[in-house]
Image (tube, rainbow, N blue to C red; front, top):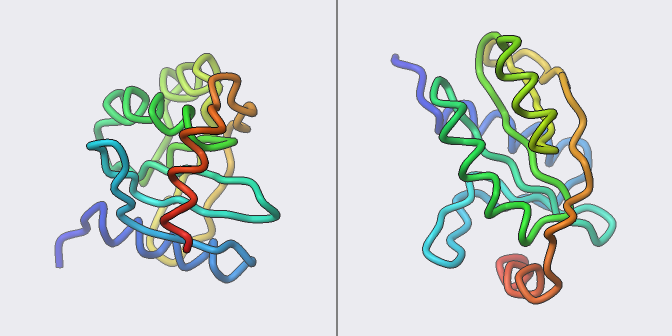
Length: 129
């Protein structure tokens, strides 16, 4: 069986649920699709899952930063120095999953979004109703 982003996404979402997050997958919002949105203690966390094209993920995560308190890239496999540097510069947290079944490893923290909008966040909250 070929590994897909969906496999990694489902495994990561399951881990979030296991540690107490309320989780939604494939959340459509404003013409975009967020891979995973999680809520814990009133805060929203957005996760974009990628096997390869992490630069595309960084562009996508800009939208997450508008409506989530924190945004993360979940990368399957190894994290290059370029990836780590770009995530840090963008304020995006980075989790690496080296294999299905392995615990995710946080490589860089996420900065609290400075472009977060209460309006956008309230709209996203509807996915949790």
